[in-house]
Image (cartoon, rainbow, N blue to C red; front, side):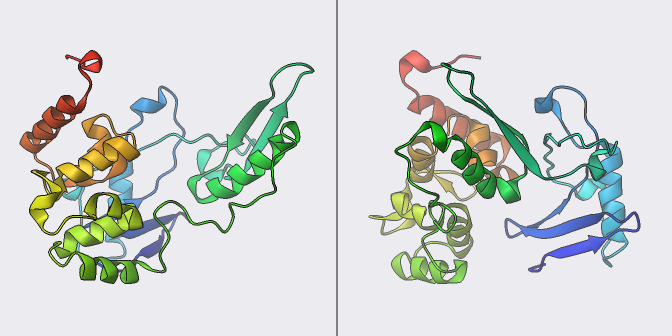
Length: 259
């Protein structure tokens, strides 16, 4: 489906169904209290059943656990406003500046979420500017993020199609949504698909991986296929191993890890 949906569930919570990586739908979210190591957070069977049930209440095509190809989970800090449950806790943020006389100031941030990260970052920066008298005023609010110097996905897609007509359509669309115009770092100078270097699985090629290593600090296979792209949705185990070997070959000998 090309459209995104907001589903109002009977428990008064909403569930999003969002087009994802051309061929998938991203469904979520849930909110449950969590105790333990944040790096070990994972969706439970109960949460999967809950999300499937909400979707099935709204769409003709029914889904179940077997249709789930990937999940991700995270732990976010919420301010304790004594409401008792994660679902009811505030999504707002606050921060404190601790500056004992003669010591470096410490900025502590509590709460926040990805949709307010930029506002929070500016407010936090403003709070510590008092310790740096030569700083200028706020300027990031209307500044485009790296790679965002274009008007619309469609216009950038059309521009890339004119410049690189040999790029497959799906690959070009992936570059638009993943890198914006930063994709010129590895596309400029290429006149055919083979110029991107050996294929490493799905639509991933060597020059893209080289860019991720040099400019986006990718080190591991997980960095490349999940944190910088979502090509883990497509890569086979053999292709992941091939990528691992290439990343290993790029490491300085003194830094190579065996395990």
